[in-house]
Amino acid sequence: MELLKKRIIKDGQNLGGGILKVDGFINHQVDPVLMDECGQEFARIFADVGATKILTAEISGIAPAVFTGKHMNLPVVYARKSKPVTMPDQVFLTLAPSHTKGRIVELIVSPEYLAGGERVLIIDDFLASGATILGLVRLAETAGAELVGIGALIEKTFEEGRIMLGGLGVPIRALVSITSMEDGQIIFRE
Amino acid sequence: MELLKKRIIKDGQNLGGGILKVDGFINHQVDPVLMDECGQEFARIFADVGATKILTAEISGIAPAVFTGKHMNLPVVYARKSKPVTMPDQVFLTLAPSHTKGRIVELIVSPEYLAGGERVLIIDDFLASGATILGLVRLAETAGAELVGIGALIEKTFEEGRIMLGGLGVPIRALVSITSMEDGQIIFRE
Figure 1 (cartoon, chains in turn yellow, brown):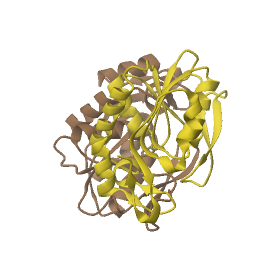
Figure 2 (cartoon, chains in turn blue, purple):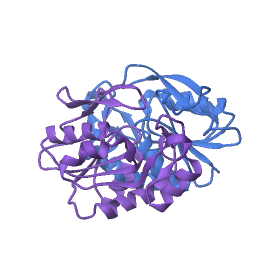
Figure 3 (cartoon, chains in turn cyan, brown):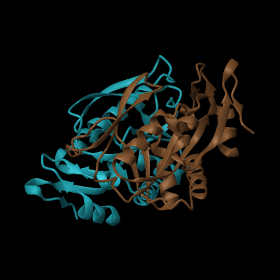
Figure 4 (cartoon, helix red, strand yellow):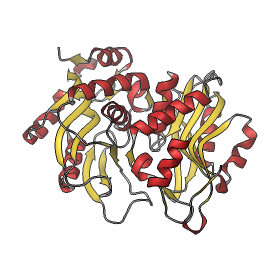
């Protein structure tokens, strides 16, 4: 997606160690007009997968997921990383290593909002190692829901998350793919 | 706002102790079509305050804030509750007690995205005790930005947050106001 790629070139920062800072338009400050465009693009890409629900992880998946949900007219569930008082005692819970936090985080979904029969489209900001997305896949499976697709704003292909997710047999699409961040550069796949 | 009020009547739950569970459409599962309508309403209410930026707090403020931002064509900054590796060492930080978490949380904003000269509109899901919103106000003041308005989806007037915020001299608007949750009821202000 050319619009997102141009924005990464303009405002993204390669911090080294494979970390792409997009805090100015996705992760801390959000450009809602850009996110709306990205949501529309995901809605176009996944128009035919028959999704009934969108699943993402707090925090930075929320913005792209809710705009996708708006364009697909679907509810969005975001997995929580801590259990609020409003959640029932029995929950679906899995563990996933967080790259940016440098520790293991919990991903928690209430059975009230994810159940058998649902057709789940996962939307997140990054597809990097694939660990967070794989955690979301496990939550959907545990709930008895069927995974129908995975979308990410930005894929870092050099972290090879796609290999980890490849056996799932669903379409995996990124709006922008970055093949290398060595030597301070950001190299996009043509 | 009649649409939101009807949804609270249909899907909201009074858990006792003044806790309103709206996990089915705002806080864990999000109805993006409803949030889009709420964002449009905030955009209408605050059309004339001259805002240049929307400020909210992760996590549950993000959905209403990004849709408001989309309708006002403004960037949205969400205060983080932990500092990610992408954030600079020098940050704006304040502490606020969290009702639902039962502890003090940090609210952190990078000076990269909140600065003097900005005119800040705060959008959040709840106005209850006002503690989180007051934390956001302090962050905006620390940054040298000017507060121009405060909007919340739902106000619990019996927690009197409005009194705490009253001296700020800016418009404070809630889309729905709840005056009492005693005896398992949810009483709306007419």
